[in-house]
Image (spheres, rainbow, N blue to C red):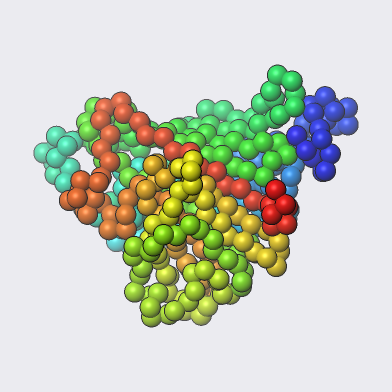
Length: 361
C-alpha cells in the first residue's frame, strides 16, 4: 500500500493511528433528508483521494464519486431518490429519469433500452400474455440485501481490500426470478474500483436477460475541452440530433442551451487480452477517468452526450444488446435467454488518476 506518498503496511498504520479508518475504509450510513431519506449507503474511502458511495437500497449502484476533492460521478437534480417513491409505469415508462443520478446506474435485469411490450408465453400464465417494460428496466430501483462489507487484509498485512457484497432480487409470481449478486472492491491506497456482477435465473422458466451499465461522468471531470478517447473502429448508429446540432463527441464543449441528447453506438476494438478501454481526459485538471470491460461480456457500447445546462453529463454504456433493443434482439436471435439455474458474469473496472502520472508508467 502507498498512502500519502509513503509505503505503508497494516503494522505501520497501527503504529501511527488507533484505527484503520485514519487511512481509509468502508462506513455504513443512512441518508436522512428529502427524497433520499432512508436510503442505506456505504462510504468507501481508499486514502488515495478516491471516495465513492455505494447505494445499497438502489441496487448497490455507485452514487457520488470524487477524486482528490473533484467530483466525477454525475449529480443530477433528482438526487438519490428512495426507491419507494419510484413508479415504474409512470410517464409512459420514462419515470426512470426521475431517479437518474450517480456514477453507475444499472439497467436490466430482463430489459434495457427503450420501452417495449413483449411476448411472455415462456412464463406459462394465461393472464400474463405479454410483459411491458419501461425505460432501462426495473433493477436500479430495487433495494439490495446486504451480505457484508468491510476491510480485508492479506496474510502479510501488505494489502488491504475494501469490499461490499449484496444481492438484488427481481421477481414476480408467474414472472421472472432473476438475482444479481454484486461485489465491489477497491484497494486501500488504490485508484481503481472493481465491479463483479453475476446474474442468475433463480426460477424455473427460461427467462430473457438484458444488461447495461449507465456510467455517468459530470463536472468538473467533464468540462469544456474534456476528451473522449476510445478504440472506435466504426460508429454503427447515431441519433438524428448529431447531424442537427453538430456538437463534437470527441472534444466536448461546455454546457449548451436547450441541448438535445446525442447518442452513438460505437464498435470498439478490444486489446490482446479482450479488454475494451474507454477514457475521458481533462487536461486542465490533469485527471482522467477510465473504464475497462470484457468485450465478450458486453458486445455493444453507447456514448451518451447530455450537455444541457443544469444536467451536464457524458454517459459511457457497455451493453449486452444493440441500440434497437429487445424487439430486434428477439427477431434476430441475439437476445440472451437464461435457463433455470444459469448465470452470466460481468467484470468491470473504473480507474481515476493524474494524467502526468499515467503517462509516466
